[in-house]
Amino acid sequence: MSQRVAILLSGGGSNMVRLIESMTGDHPARPVLVLSNDPDAGGLAKARALGVETAAISHKAFKGDRPGFEAALSVPLAAARPDIICLAGFMRVLTADFVRQWQGRMLNIHPSLLPKYRGLNTHARAIEAGDAEAGCTVHEVTAELDDGPILGQARVPIQPGDSAESLAARVLAQEHCLYPAVLRRFAAGDRRPILLP
Ligand code: GAR
Image 1 (cartoon, protein in one colour):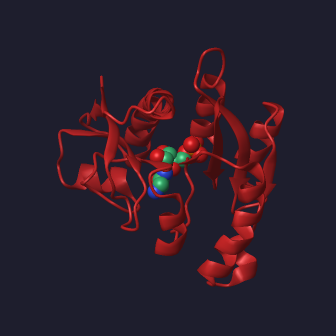
Image 2 (image 1 turned 180 degrees about the vertical axis):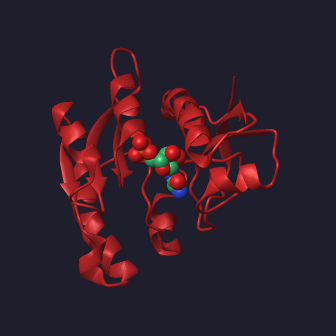
Image 3 (image 1 turned 180 degrees about the horizontal axis):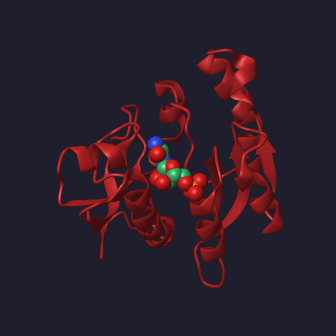
């Protein structure tokens, strides 16, 4: 029996596309839902074009009521019966209660070499700090923001003259390799970290 995967996103969904495209053939998982907090997220149309069911619950209607938003989010999520949730550019902070419900079954990709640069503006912060390298991390989601056991990391050099945008593009290309590789391994029950390149 395949593992059922729900993907949560807020934006264009390039990681989501790579994850969905990877789940074919002998892959141990299949996508069952793409869910967004933004009804206008570009990723929703891409998911539908790939034949995956979508749903959107706008967080704006909840005016800061996170538990209320998460209760609404949980309706399509429960209907899809996922075994694994992949956060892929999902830009809402989840409550500890919600995270606890899915702990051990929820992954996130973050555009830094955690534990460095939790939160936002990771690329600008790495350049500002004068770091020689940057990268991305896939980790299990725990109640602490951008924390939890690391399942994979990919590194890229920071080049002279890099802007946050040029570095983000270099990191994103690695995200597209790392996340599918980690999901395949995780869905097969193997939590050993993958280190790229
Ligand atoms: C990715 O770079 C992902 O690592 C980042 O958002 C981007 C989404 O791109 N996630 C975070 O910053 C989470 N805190 P995508 O929509 O094209 O996959």
